[in-house]
Length: 275
Length: 333
Image (cartoon, rainbow over all chains, first blue to last red; front, side, top):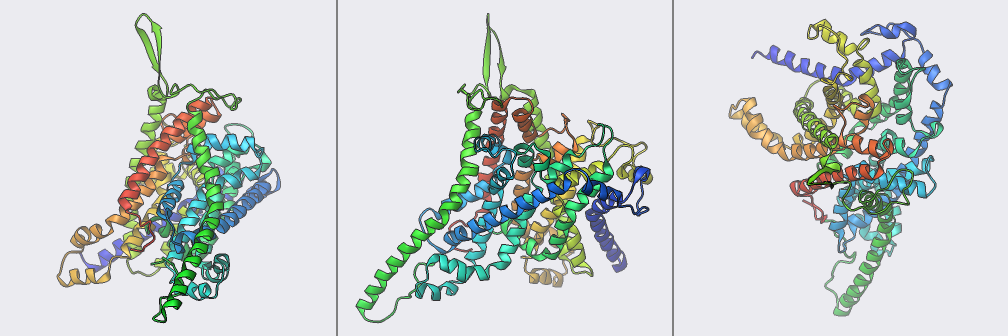
């Protein structure tokens, strides 16, 4: 094959990959900027620039509250899981004790739990604790997927740090808690940012628990709010509004992901490929 | 490598110093051991509360006659939710329970069908993406960023975006395919029984191929460059190099990625629930369980479905841990 053909073929593939990846979101933005009957004409390029869908979704209804709920839940979940995971990861990676392998295995197993397997039991617990229809139920329930993941990734990260860094502190008689806070924490910011971000995204996107443990419109998080957005009648799905809401909740995530691109890729592969 | 046992390395000094050192060492390791458990307890407690106990409760509910309105009054009924033979007398009888429920088996079939096909497509496509991203070319950073976008988009949002694109009257997908000439008339992707499952698979492939590609890319980047150099000098055709060298070397990475994705696919809920609501052709095991639990007021029956799904995934997880030969001792590779 001549070089030119090969090169063209390769770039055609690259263009296909880029279009495949970004076109649906591009089309969602394009739709969200349409108004009235323009919505029902298929366009490949922007023809309209109306913010009415955005005004609609942000001004009336509870959508802004839903966004706030999602932010609260995701931030608190990330904070709690990181705090619990840093100390646990220190114990799991730097201290030798019997049963460590088994513990790691259990944590890995929990990270594979299908959410549906605990749904019935959690539902009973949530009702019993009186947190049904509150954000507490979600903050608690989300620990099931953020905690094992953060512990696992932070353990892998801490394990690879050299012994020397804590030697001096041990000789000086620093307590393990001081060692974690003073020696490890400053070194771990990159890993904390990555795992925190991945946990944030997971909590932000969660649907099944949010659908089950909250039935109140103003307590819902955004995924459920978007899934339940409906028009005046069954036939009238408000596509413009749905697309505007979708763009609003997705843009911050995409910005974060693009900024922390490299870190996210390394975090994802640490959770998967590296043992 | 990370076994930190003692900070003080052994010295050649006098014996009593050594002995003192040993004493201090055991003191130290005891102190470290204590703090290890102190550090682990809160995390383990939360995991036990949020995963262990609810799982046991779900299994318990599957053995009772619990209903949504009366969870406390649940009574033990044995395996009746899974398997029950009702004798009508005169030698006639009928089997009931989950294992004899055609709707459950339909959900199992849908889930397996969806998992096998979507993971297969994602693996092949992910491999292609990874090979492209592994090549040197102008704008690679941009392509890598673009590929991350579907992964970052919440599943619910992807489902809605695609539901709109697949709309039978105003959807751009029909428009595209009709312009190209593949379709002669628009189709209702998500509502039509013949295409509903494919609609789900298309969205899933779109959303998770990037994840697959990144995992495979990580494997590709561990292949040493001199392998390719050598093959090039020997004049071996690149296609042959791919099949004989690259693929065997990245097989472990692909295998782990496939199992990871398969586990995810088997518990699919969000995508199907939002993209094709109330559709028998796409109903997955998770959707079946959720419906029984909270919509049909068959809490115990739904718990039984959840338990079975859990068992399936547990077996695959054990298999994965064996295959991946995870290094759990923390002794490095």
